Image (cartoon, rainbow, N blue to C red):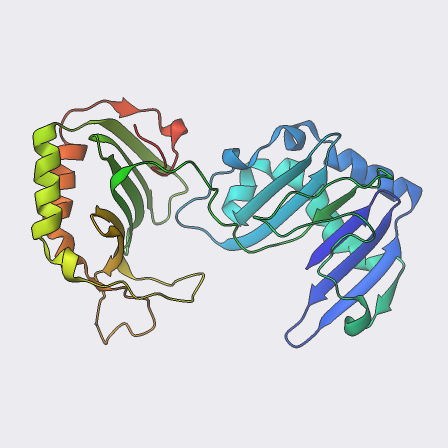
Length: 318
Protein backbone atom coordinates (compact mmCIF):
# COMPACT_ATOMS: atom_id res chain seq x y z
CA UNK A 1 0.00 0.00 0.00
CA UNK A 2 1.13 3.57 -0.67
CA UNK A 3 -0.38 6.96 0.14
CA UNK A 4 0.30 10.46 -1.12
CA UNK A 5 -1.06 13.32 1.00
CA UNK A 6 -0.90 16.87 -0.31
CA UNK A 7 -0.89 20.02 1.81
CA UNK A 8 -4.39 20.76 0.57
CA UNK A 9 -5.64 17.61 2.29
CA UNK A 10 -6.18 15.70 -0.96
CA UNK A 11 -5.04 12.10 -0.71
CA UNK A 12 -4.31 9.33 -3.19
CA UNK A 13 -4.08 5.72 -1.97
CA UNK A 14 -3.19 2.50 -3.78
CA UNK A 15 -3.73 -0.94 -2.29
CA UNK A 16 -2.16 -3.86 -4.12
CA UNK A 17 -4.00 -7.18 -4.30
CA UNK A 18 -2.90 -10.48 -5.79
CA UNK A 19 -3.94 -9.64 -9.34
CA UNK A 20 -4.91 -5.96 -9.25
CA UNK A 21 -4.54 -2.62 -7.52
CA UNK A 22 -7.39 -0.63 -6.02
CA UNK A 23 -7.03 3.17 -6.28
CA UNK A 24 -8.82 5.64 -3.99
CA UNK A 25 -8.84 9.42 -3.87
CA UNK A 26 -10.45 11.72 -1.35
CA UNK A 27 -10.13 14.84 0.77
CA UNK A 28 -9.32 15.14 4.47
CA UNK A 29 -11.40 17.47 6.56
CA UNK A 30 -9.68 20.57 7.92
CA UNK A 31 -9.52 18.96 11.34
CA UNK A 32 -8.19 15.71 9.94
CA UNK A 33 -5.45 17.50 8.05
CA UNK A 34 -4.42 19.47 11.14
CA UNK A 35 -4.17 16.23 13.11
CA UNK A 36 -1.89 14.58 10.52
CA UNK A 37 0.29 17.69 10.37
CA UNK A 38 0.53 17.60 14.16
CA UNK A 39 1.52 13.92 14.09
CA UNK A 40 4.20 14.64 11.49
CA UNK A 41 5.65 17.37 13.69
CA UNK A 42 6.20 15.01 16.60
CA UNK A 43 9.54 16.16 18.05
CA UNK A 44 11.03 12.67 18.23
CA UNK A 45 10.03 11.94 14.64
CA UNK A 46 11.43 15.26 13.38
CA UNK A 47 14.79 14.56 15.04
CA UNK A 48 15.07 11.01 13.68
CA UNK A 49 17.60 10.21 10.94
CA UNK A 50 18.10 7.05 8.90
CA UNK A 51 21.41 6.18 10.55
CA UNK A 52 19.68 6.04 13.93
CA UNK A 53 17.39 3.22 12.75
CA UNK A 54 18.99 -0.07 13.74
CA UNK A 55 17.86 -3.23 11.98
CA UNK A 56 18.24 -6.44 14.03
CA UNK A 57 19.68 -9.59 12.47
CA UNK A 58 16.63 -11.65 13.41
CA UNK A 59 13.48 -9.83 12.46
CA UNK A 60 9.99 -9.97 11.02
CA UNK A 61 9.91 -8.12 7.70
CA UNK A 62 7.52 -5.17 7.83
CA UNK A 63 8.66 -2.34 5.56
CA UNK A 64 7.57 1.23 6.26
CA UNK A 65 8.99 4.08 4.18
CA UNK A 66 8.15 7.68 5.05
CA UNK A 67 8.94 10.86 3.06
CA UNK A 68 8.01 14.01 4.97
CA UNK A 69 8.27 17.54 3.60
CA UNK A 70 10.10 19.72 6.10
CA UNK A 71 10.75 23.47 5.77
CA UNK A 72 13.88 23.17 3.64
CA UNK A 73 14.34 19.47 2.94
CA UNK A 74 12.71 16.05 2.65
CA UNK A 75 13.05 13.74 5.62
CA UNK A 76 13.34 10.15 4.34
CA UNK A 77 13.08 7.24 6.74
CA UNK A 78 12.91 3.52 5.99
CA UNK A 79 12.17 0.77 8.49
CA UNK A 80 12.62 -2.76 7.15
CA UNK A 81 11.24 -4.62 10.14
CA UNK A 82 8.70 -4.41 12.93
CA UNK A 83 11.59 -4.59 15.39
CA UNK A 84 13.32 -1.47 14.04
CA UNK A 85 10.04 0.43 14.29
CA UNK A 86 9.52 -0.55 17.93
CA UNK A 87 11.80 2.09 19.58
CA UNK A 88 9.85 4.79 17.72
CA UNK A 89 6.43 3.21 18.10
CA UNK A 90 4.98 6.15 20.02
CA UNK A 91 5.83 8.54 17.16
CA UNK A 92 4.90 6.16 14.32
CA UNK A 93 1.69 4.72 15.74
CA UNK A 94 -0.53 7.75 14.92
CA UNK A 95 0.64 7.67 11.29
CA UNK A 96 0.18 3.92 11.00
CA UNK A 97 -3.27 4.16 12.54
CA UNK A 98 -4.17 6.96 10.10
CA UNK A 99 -3.02 4.83 7.17
CA UNK A 100 -5.07 1.86 8.32
CA UNK A 101 -8.20 3.99 8.77
CA UNK A 102 -7.85 6.09 5.62
CA UNK A 103 -10.02 3.82 3.46
CA UNK A 104 -12.98 4.54 5.77
CA UNK A 105 -13.01 8.25 4.88
CA UNK A 106 -15.24 9.53 2.04
CA UNK A 107 -13.51 8.80 -1.27
CA UNK A 108 -13.97 7.84 -4.87
CA UNK A 109 -12.49 4.74 -6.46
CA UNK A 110 -10.65 4.96 -9.76
CA UNK A 111 -9.90 2.19 -12.20
CA UNK A 112 -6.39 0.81 -12.05
CA UNK A 113 -5.64 1.93 -15.60
CA UNK A 114 -6.85 5.47 -14.97
CA UNK A 115 -5.56 6.04 -11.44
CA UNK A 116 -2.51 3.95 -10.63
CA UNK A 117 0.64 6.09 -10.46
CA UNK A 118 2.57 4.55 -7.53
CA UNK A 119 1.60 7.55 -5.38
CA UNK A 120 3.75 10.00 -7.31
CA UNK A 121 2.92 13.64 -6.75
CA UNK A 122 1.05 15.53 -9.49
CA UNK A 123 2.07 18.57 -11.48
CA UNK A 124 5.58 19.92 -11.17
CA UNK A 125 6.39 18.08 -7.97
CA UNK A 126 8.96 15.35 -8.64
CA UNK A 127 9.13 12.42 -6.26
CA UNK A 128 11.91 10.07 -7.34
CA UNK A 129 12.71 6.50 -6.53
CA UNK A 130 15.25 6.00 -3.76
CA UNK A 131 18.77 6.39 -5.09
CA UNK A 132 17.80 9.05 -7.64
CA UNK A 133 17.91 12.81 -7.12
CA UNK A 134 15.88 14.16 -4.22
CA UNK A 135 12.49 15.69 -5.00
CA UNK A 136 12.40 19.47 -5.33
CA UNK A 137 9.84 22.11 -4.49
CA UNK A 138 7.68 23.53 -7.22
CA UNK A 139 7.52 27.29 -7.83
CA UNK A 140 4.11 27.37 -6.16
CA UNK A 141 5.58 25.92 -2.99
CA UNK A 142 3.13 23.00 -3.10
CA UNK A 143 5.02 20.25 -1.30
CA UNK A 144 3.67 16.81 -0.55
CA UNK A 145 4.35 14.16 2.06
CA UNK A 146 4.15 10.49 1.17
CA UNK A 147 4.08 7.38 3.33
CA UNK A 148 4.75 4.21 1.40
CA UNK A 149 6.62 0.90 1.64
CA UNK A 150 9.50 0.55 -0.79
CA UNK A 151 12.22 -1.91 -1.65
CA UNK A 152 15.53 -1.61 0.24
CA UNK A 153 17.58 1.30 -1.12
CA UNK A 154 20.98 0.78 -2.75
CA UNK A 155 24.03 1.23 -0.56
CA UNK A 156 25.13 4.89 -0.38
CA UNK A 157 27.98 5.83 -2.68
CA UNK A 158 31.19 6.75 -0.89
CA UNK A 159 34.64 7.83 -1.92
CA UNK A 160 36.52 4.64 -2.85
CA UNK A 161 39.00 3.25 -0.34
CA UNK A 162 42.15 1.66 -1.74
CA UNK A 163 41.30 -1.76 -0.42
CA UNK A 164 43.50 -4.83 -0.52
CA UNK A 165 40.68 -7.01 0.80
CA UNK A 166 37.04 -6.71 1.80
CA UNK A 167 35.16 -9.54 3.48
CA UNK A 168 31.43 -9.58 4.27
CA UNK A 169 30.08 -12.57 6.17
CA UNK A 170 26.75 -13.93 7.33
CA UNK A 171 25.95 -17.10 9.23
CA UNK A 172 22.63 -18.46 10.40
CA UNK A 173 22.42 -21.38 12.83
CA UNK A 174 19.69 -22.81 15.02
CA UNK A 175 20.75 -20.62 17.95
CA UNK A 176 22.12 -17.37 16.50
CA UNK A 177 22.68 -15.15 13.49
CA UNK A 178 26.01 -13.40 12.92
CA UNK A 179 27.03 -10.71 10.45
CA UNK A 180 30.51 -9.33 9.98
CA UNK A 181 32.87 -7.43 7.74
CA UNK A 182 36.59 -6.79 7.39
CA UNK A 183 38.41 -4.10 5.42
CA UNK A 184 42.19 -4.19 4.96
CA UNK A 185 43.68 -1.36 2.95
CA UNK A 186 46.82 -1.42 0.82
CA UNK A 187 48.84 0.28 3.56
CA UNK A 188 47.75 -2.22 6.21
CA UNK A 189 45.10 -0.14 7.99
CA UNK A 190 42.16 -2.34 8.88
CA UNK A 191 38.69 -2.34 10.36
CA UNK A 192 36.59 -5.32 11.46
CA UNK A 193 33.00 -5.37 12.69
CA UNK A 194 30.78 -8.15 13.97
CA UNK A 195 27.13 -8.24 15.02
CA UNK A 196 25.47 -11.23 16.68
CA UNK A 197 21.95 -11.95 17.87
CA UNK A 198 20.80 -15.07 19.66
CA UNK A 199 17.54 -16.70 18.69
CA UNK A 200 14.85 -15.61 21.14
CA UNK A 201 16.72 -12.46 22.17
CA UNK A 202 16.16 -8.89 20.98
CA UNK A 203 19.67 -7.80 21.95
CA UNK A 204 22.24 -7.39 19.18
CA UNK A 205 25.86 -7.59 20.35
CA UNK A 206 28.27 -5.44 18.33
CA UNK A 207 32.05 -5.34 18.46
CA UNK A 208 34.41 -3.30 16.31
CA UNK A 209 38.18 -3.27 16.13
CA UNK A 210 40.67 -1.32 14.07
CA UNK A 211 44.37 -0.84 13.70
CA UNK A 212 47.23 -1.53 11.32
CA UNK A 213 49.02 -4.73 10.42
CA UNK A 214 52.75 -4.74 9.81
CA UNK A 215 54.44 -4.79 6.38
CA UNK A 216 55.39 -8.40 7.06
CA UNK A 217 51.75 -9.26 7.74
CA UNK A 218 50.71 -7.53 4.51
CA UNK A 219 53.14 -9.76 2.60
CA UNK A 220 51.75 -12.81 4.41
CA UNK A 221 48.19 -11.80 3.52
CA UNK A 222 49.12 -11.30 -0.14
CA UNK A 223 50.79 -14.71 -0.22
CA UNK A 224 47.72 -16.26 1.40
CA UNK A 225 45.47 -14.74 -1.24
CA UNK A 226 47.70 -15.68 -4.17
CA UNK A 227 48.50 -19.24 -3.07
CA UNK A 228 44.95 -20.20 -2.16
CA UNK A 229 42.32 -21.80 -4.36
CA UNK A 230 40.45 -18.50 -4.41
CA UNK A 231 42.26 -17.21 -7.50
CA UNK A 232 40.82 -20.03 -9.60
CA UNK A 233 37.18 -19.41 -8.73
CA UNK A 234 35.02 -17.42 -11.15
CA UNK A 235 32.11 -15.28 -10.03
CA UNK A 236 28.65 -16.03 -11.42
CA UNK A 237 26.32 -13.08 -11.69
CA UNK A 238 22.80 -13.39 -10.30
CA UNK A 239 19.77 -11.31 -11.16
CA UNK A 240 18.18 -11.74 -7.74
CA UNK A 241 17.94 -8.62 -5.55
CA UNK A 242 17.27 -10.56 -2.36
CA UNK A 243 19.07 -13.86 -1.95
CA UNK A 244 17.88 -16.56 0.47
CA UNK A 245 20.75 -18.22 2.25
CA UNK A 246 21.48 -21.05 4.63
CA UNK A 247 24.50 -21.80 6.80
CA UNK A 248 27.55 -19.58 6.28
CA UNK A 249 28.20 -17.18 3.42
CA UNK A 250 31.17 -14.99 2.49
CA UNK A 251 31.40 -12.18 -0.02
CA UNK A 252 35.05 -11.48 -0.88
CA UNK A 253 36.46 -8.55 -2.83
CA UNK A 254 40.14 -9.13 -3.51
CA UNK A 255 42.45 -6.61 -5.17
CA UNK A 256 44.49 -8.32 -7.88
CA UNK A 257 46.77 -6.91 -10.63
CA UNK A 258 44.00 -7.55 -13.18
CA UNK A 259 41.36 -5.79 -11.07
CA UNK A 260 39.02 -6.60 -8.20
CA UNK A 261 37.98 -10.24 -7.93
CA UNK A 262 34.56 -10.68 -6.32
CA UNK A 263 33.49 -14.05 -4.98
CA UNK A 264 30.58 -15.48 -3.03
CA UNK A 265 31.37 -18.61 -1.04
CA UNK A 266 29.01 -20.67 1.08
CA UNK A 267 28.83 -23.74 3.26
CA UNK A 268 25.98 -25.09 1.10
CA UNK A 269 27.79 -24.91 -2.24
CA UNK A 270 26.71 -27.76 -4.57
CA UNK A 271 24.67 -29.43 -1.83
CA UNK A 272 21.60 -31.07 -3.32
CA UNK A 273 19.83 -31.28 0.03
CA UNK A 274 19.42 -27.47 0.13
CA UNK A 275 18.32 -26.72 -3.45
CA UNK A 276 16.30 -23.57 -2.74
CA UNK A 277 19.10 -21.48 -1.29
CA UNK A 278 21.68 -19.41 -3.13
CA UNK A 279 25.02 -21.21 -2.82
CA UNK A 280 27.41 -18.80 -4.52
CA UNK A 281 30.56 -19.47 -6.55
CA UNK A 282 32.37 -22.02 -4.42
CA UNK A 283 32.74 -23.77 -1.09
CA UNK A 284 33.61 -21.69 1.95
CA UNK A 285 36.47 -24.09 2.74
CA UNK A 286 38.38 -22.45 -0.13
CA UNK A 287 38.86 -19.44 2.16
CA UNK A 288 40.06 -21.41 5.18
CA UNK A 289 43.61 -20.02 5.14
CA UNK A 290 42.31 -16.47 4.65
CA UNK A 291 39.83 -16.78 7.51
CA UNK A 292 42.61 -18.13 9.72
CA UNK A 293 44.76 -15.09 8.90
CA UNK A 294 41.89 -12.74 9.80
CA UNK A 295 41.25 -14.55 13.07
CA UNK A 296 44.92 -14.45 14.11
CA UNK A 297 46.02 -11.04 12.83
CA UNK A 298 42.86 -8.92 12.97
CA UNK A 299 40.62 -10.08 15.82
CA UNK A 300 43.24 -11.40 18.25
CA UNK A 301 46.32 -9.24 17.71
CA UNK A 302 45.59 -6.93 20.65
CA UNK A 303 44.59 -3.81 18.71
CA UNK A 304 42.13 -1.45 20.31
CA UNK A 305 38.38 -1.82 20.23
CA UNK A 306 36.23 0.93 18.76
CA UNK A 307 32.91 2.40 19.82
CA UNK A 308 30.09 0.06 18.59
CA UNK A 309 28.02 3.17 17.90
CA UNK A 310 30.46 4.15 15.14
CA UNK A 311 29.69 1.16 12.92
CA UNK A 312 30.14 1.97 9.21
CA UNK A 313 29.92 -1.52 7.64
CA UNK A 314 33.66 -1.43 6.87
CA UNK A 315 33.36 1.40 4.38
CA UNK A 316 36.36 3.17 5.93
CA UNK A 317 39.29 2.14 8.09
CA UNK A 318 40.01 2.19 10.93
